[in-house]
Image (cartoon, rainbow, N blue to C red; front, side, top):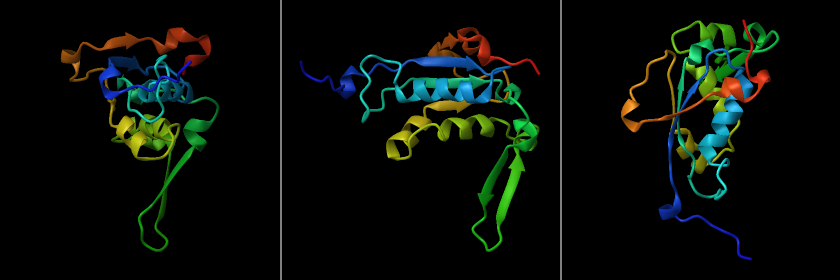
Amino acid sequence: MKTFSAKPSDIDKKWVVIDAEGVVLGRLAVIIATRLRGKHKASFTPHMDMGDNVIVINADKVQLTGRKRADKVYYWHTGHPGGIKQRTAAQILDGRFPERVVEKAVQRMMPGGPLSRKQLSNMRVYAGAEHPHTAQEPEVIDVAAMNSKNTRSA
């Protein structure tokens, strides 16, 4: 029995839409990261970009469990001495770019490296319900219906 290794001609990429409204952030990020890497396919090959193109809509309506909305802190550094900055998840979700919470959650569930950065470029996150990718005829994935724990009412 030989180990299967996918070639670029074997890769079949699809487009999928995921609605993040009311879905728990961590559970959503796991499903998106799995789709981006291609681990949901039987022909998964770790060193190839064989994941799907994922469109996430309503990223501003994602839910966080417990007190994470107020207590979860995102840090970054400006590069200058004493330049550590921070924002809570609530400040980011209520701010100008609420899709960054979903982007960071998915990025931190992917392994670090050049391939993961390439796979992350196949994810498009939008704060509202509209997206400009209707020409690709994306398949809708209902994350909320997969498991009752995936949703949380505010």
